[in-house]
Length: 266
Image (cartoon, rainbow, N blue to C red; front, side):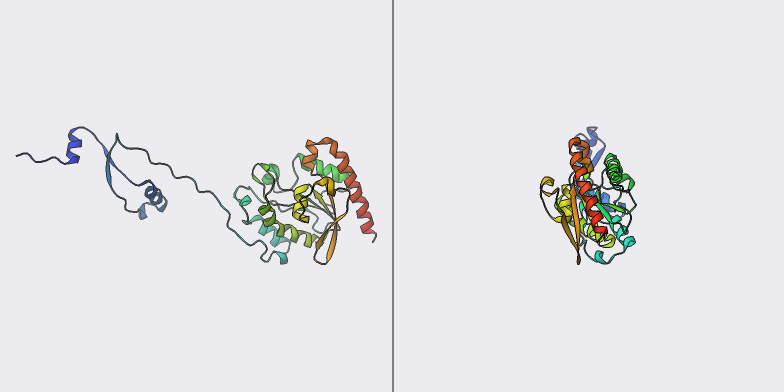
């Protein structure tokens, strides 16, 4: 009397082999992440090689910065602590794609403070603001009013990490970085601040206004019990794309130089 063949025996007689056990994809991914010593049990379902489908590969996890309170104890930091905090900052998602943060560069007790938008690709690679073509133009602008990078001049940016693709920093990114910039201003105690472009204006003055409406005026920034005069002009990167506006920037720089002279005689 012949016995009934099992499913396995039938498949073997038909020459369908090897067989494998398909596991639930989500469980398989979790098991791979836990390692061989901590694999989770999975339901076993017999599937022939002809029926098998490849398991999907696990997607890479998106790096998301933890939410931190940027203002905690920053107001009391010295220069070295502030630089280290900026370099290790994870207060917004700009940290997830940077090569390095760019705190700023120059004389830490300068009379002049120039503030731009944020690091570009070259700045991100070198860790110093304004080192590309826009940096060369900024150096020429400084030389035109008898200034030099690092000599009574400090250069910083509204955000300390490069926005992906050099896009404009977003409001939450500006807000996350502002405590660092605020502390830099407090430590430097500049006589005059020059804001380079609309992003710097939005960060320091909190104004979303056109440069044309702000140029030609002496604005102010309150730093504790001090009022620091502010001059607004175009960002060097903008001037590289809009050469005719260099003449307007020259006017702004001349106004800034005249204002500084009056401040130093007070």
